[in-house]
Length: 178
Ligand code: IMP
Ligand code: MG
Image (cartoon, rainbow, N blue to C red):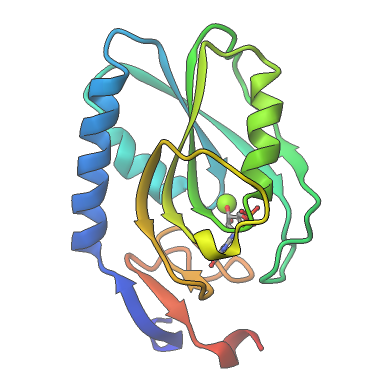
């Protein structure tokens, strides 16, 4: 599996350090507030679990599943909801937890969708950000790393459902998906 990587961009140690930092800031910002983390399945699961362990204030978790990719490496621009929230978010402070922002289409759609449920606040925490690829404007409050425009896998990120279990994040060799 690791042999399909052209390069390791972020190893376990760098990921853990950054996520600890993010957890600390979020814990401070949301003190005394009712915080709900909404993970976007399935890419965010590793980040969600590790970030949540670094949040030191009470918080709940919920998940949504959306699809905009199929098995391709380029977004289709159409977002479908595959799984909705289990709980109400009205009046709560919601933080969307996402693995990576690419075109921004998925998060833009999710922001509008969740805003219509009247949360007290709505922000984004993403581990990775590929600003070069942005097609729609999005305000990201908490960001782990800015990354170059390569197709990345590992630590939750997949190509055709594979590589999610790699503990690091790397650049997938082009010959694997071309
Ligand atoms: P967006 O709507 O184009 O911003 O796409 C966001 C979603 O596409 C992310 O949540 C990922 O699931 C997926 N994605 C975007 N870039 C990559 C990548 O480099 N590797 C794996 N998945 C990606
Ligand atoms: Mg995702």
